[in-house]
Image (tube, rainbow, N blue to C red):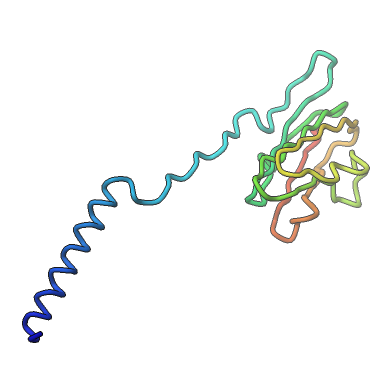
Length: 149
C-alpha cells in the first residue's frame, strides 16, 4: 500500500472513531452522576423531649467528619444519638478531654455502617467537651459539645 493511501486510511479511521465517541458520549455513555449529598437538616439541633431530656443527633459518614462537629446543650440530661451513615467505615464517639469530667464514661464504642446508638448522660459543668472517633482522630474526625453556663 502506498504511503498516500496509508495516510488517507488512517485519517478515515481516526475521524470515524471520533464520531462514534461523540455519539456515545451524547447518548449517556459518560460517567454516572454523583449521588446527592446527604441532608444535614436537623442534625445537631437540640430539642427537648416530653420527658424533659435534651436530644441531639450527630452523624458520621465515609469522609471522616461528624455532622455537625459542634453542638451546644444546657446543663442537665442529654440523650445523644450517633448515626453511622457511612457505606464502608466503622466509627465511634468518645469524649477525649482528660481535664474535664467526661459526660459519657465509655462513649459509643463501635458503629458499623448503617448502625446507630443512643446514650443518655448528665452534664453539670459548663465548658467545652471535645469528642472524637478514636479510630480516625489522626485524620481529624473530632468535634466539641459545649455545655452552656
